[in-house]
Figure 1 (cartoon, rainbow, N blue to C red):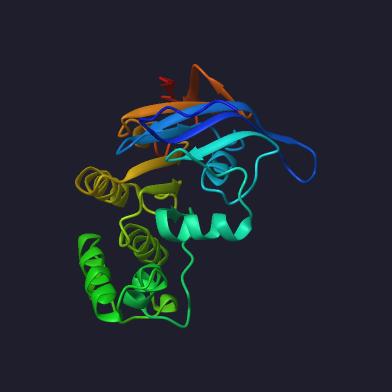
Figure 2: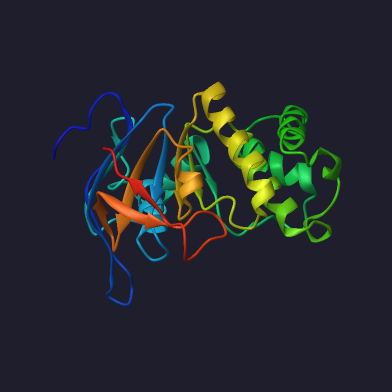
Length: 247
């Protein structure tokens, strides 16, 4: 076992993961992520981006390899320890917005804070601040079924940012949004990362989104590659841009 570098908040070595049907998802992926860095994991659909994020976040256990967070192993603890790590130190944004239907918007946003032991009053204040930043503050008392999909995704992003996680994993976070909305959301994510020292690991198949990151790791068929062809947002044929790997 090799000790991870001291300046990497996340570090992974030779990750291998196989789907239940036996097909390989990751084949020997290694990377390091520095504190406060915005790292884009870029690649086409099926390249292993989501699987890599899930392994780094401890949502699934790798078949082979190591994952470390702040010099503590993520790949060896049991499910309960990994769950506590995700609750206390990590944030997650899915491509499809998922909210608790019984809770209103501000309660959904405040939920991670209250699960950490924050008082209801303080959690509500923090939740309302983030909802305002994402232009959905006026929806604070509405229920999820009353929102449009794009509004639900904004609430999910506010919920992930509200606890100021050490690492935020964002899996295609702007997928449900119109192109006009994506820029604002991504600027909010990057500004929050810079101001709060949040490390962001962002999975994307969009070259414009990847360009906003400090650094890009390109995946293809579960392996790190030097370049991968990514279409700009809304373009699947012409005008493809190469996304460069720099690790």
